[in-house]
Length: 342
Image 1 (tube, rainbow, N blue to C red):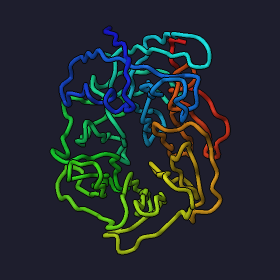
Image 2 (image 1 turned 30 degrees about the horizontal axis):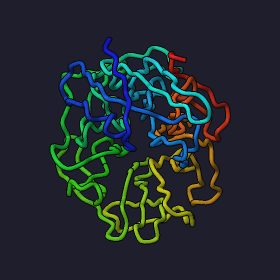
Image 3 (image 1 turned 180 degrees about the vertical axis):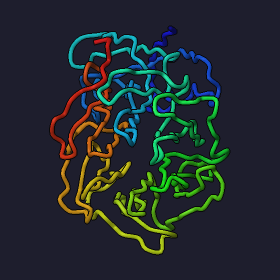
């Protein structure tokens, strides 16, 4: 097993997360980068002389299988964490196992982990029947068949060949997908797209005023999505049906510079990430924060169980950067994956 020591002065972690992807080549990866992280200072305080770089999370983007039996996730195993210096501004160097990174799947209690690919993925999403998993790799969308226990990596289907695509979501019938896309390659012109499940018949949905992101199809035929107004600097949740002739505004919060990401629906509630994991009533009322550290994706099962990545953007340890589960109301929180270095 190869090990990579990561130490850097950059503020961006995206470089580390996806620069080794060779999709869809199934070979071992090796990188040797460096990465420094301040572990004791405030996330917004750089008085200690550190660039305050975020560590690369070990677990990310959990996706609950429709049966409730399995959770797919992206994984970058942590090999070690070494502390340097003392006092309030000590630093950690994190070492990872890149040749074991990629898409993994496990049982719903965290047992039975098994590696599926040797390249990392983003935003995995199951089809309603659970026999396909769609995901993004370096801005392109793919899907891969699943027989109820094993993925067939030889039958992976390329759905898009250009542009920047992310956050795929199957419709309730499974014959189409919505996703966030950017055909400009600039990353600042985000629209929503719809295509057939085989990648044909592309349709674009554009909001001329706002940046659209993270579509999520729900069983009623509605599509939830986050929207960010670049003028007011406010992020809200909306939904639409059909060709966007009917658009419904769900939230009306007044906070600025906060985007509502990855909306999901269960029962009478809508969930989303915004510096933590929140839920609101379907009409946008009764907003409740379920947990404070959720930045790397979450998933809601068919019976309302939530799996999320408990990560504070600052530190990896025994509990941070791992997958936890809780009930739909935020109770009964339980850790199901671990960073075994600690």
